[in-house]
Image (cartoon, rainbow, N blue to C red):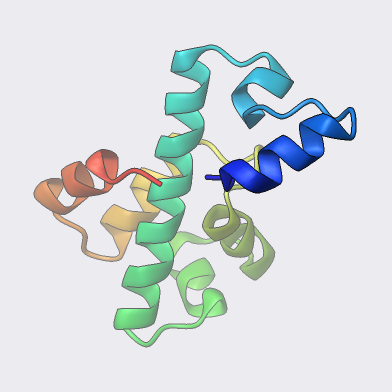
Length: 106
């Protein structure tokens, strides 16, 4: 969240201030989908680190590449929610842990 003073200064200089949602013209459900993918990516990285696995270790387990795992963790648009969920399950995540991931916001 931007400080009021900074926002007023920018607007006084002619800048338009708003959210990424407004700038990109995203609907609420599109924002929710993006937030969900990012939360799953964070959950994947946290689980990988807790298990002391490298991205290459995870990639080998799911028969993919290290770069694909990096994309999963960073929220790359080319990664599907299905792949994120399947990877978390392959690393031993339970349904309740997945549900908590779905519930975690920004």
